[in-house]
Length: 261
Image (cartoon, rainbow, N blue to C red; front, side, top):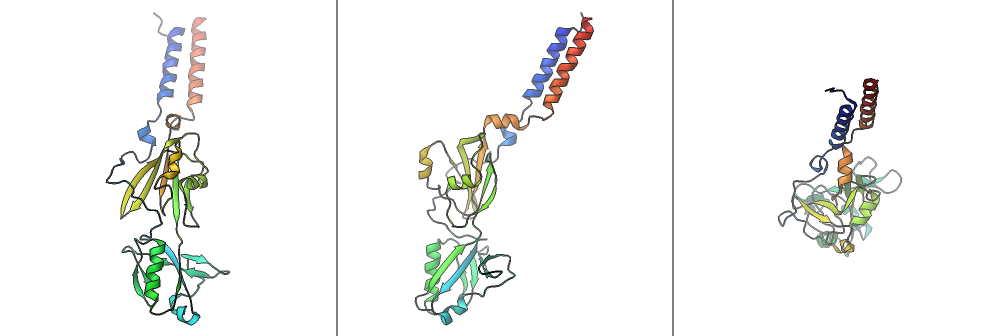
């Protein structure tokens, strides 16, 4: 029996090609955040308004009588890297909320800001200022509001939100929308609350997604779009597989022709 018969060579070539094509990655090698089940213990609680937390950078201005408010407004500076540009090269300094949730404010000293909404923080500061200023006008703005979009979107990355409010669909729009390989019914949200990472999922195939209590995002939220099976299968496809398959086929043909003579 000729072990180099054309039929045996062709069969061997088919087996080699099949092995190459089926040596694709599994979802366990590709998909992010697989070992974090959604449960009551780690599910995101509802926040209808942005809440300040440690490491937030906030800008605070106080309006009112010019002389009275002067001690409560730090002067514009030109060398701060953690700041907001105002006029020309001048920048207004920001306050960093520390690990304990506090800021150090002129005259008033240590103020607990973390855990408050913008409305609550404004009222809190007004109450502190009323002994110094009649009818103070307080404006607070979060400077480092960023969200991160990962996975099967056209332009994954971290994005700065200027107006302190952004919806899930707006965030996906900033990232260029989902690719054709993204799972529409499995969009993952990660959020830090009370010092812990919490999770929830969205189903973009349902119109009810806009009614989700977490449809509007918080600062530092992470959105992850899981790849579908087609993307997972193609993710580990070796770019040289085509060359290898062609070479194997050509070699088998040459040998078959040679033996057949």
